[in-house]
Length: 207
Image (cartoon, rainbow, N blue to C red):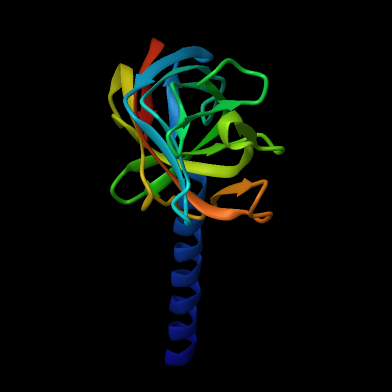
């Protein structure tokens, strides 16, 4: 009789754990408010640096985009006055020093227990092509970037997106790479920037 009770207790406990795990998996962070809403933003220095030390460095940028659903956004970052190894660089077909970076974003949890929210920012499938005319070099940036979003659980028309090398999101695989015409194979890379964002309508990042 005792063994039946024990088995029954274990079964009920397993069901409860499964239910909690399922609820946690469904409870993703989301934007609450008037959606879609426009995003604008600016930052100071932005850097994309490969494992070999090759870096695209831009002292400022402008961000435009849209929060287009409760969990997704579309943005374009216009990096300005960009250089590689001290030489002017730009995305293919764009004016000198300007690198245009289109990104699609999806919210994620950096730490669900601590209510820390992130966003996975994915580059186009073909990557971003950056030319350095003075060096006769072409760089291709591919992959995705992770950023930390704040504030959380408060209605606000402004926010901060911070990108640095040690970020990760729960259950998310991501990575950035830089390939050059000379090395012939992608090298792991990291991004670094802090963006000050403004939303046309106040949003709550619910976590």
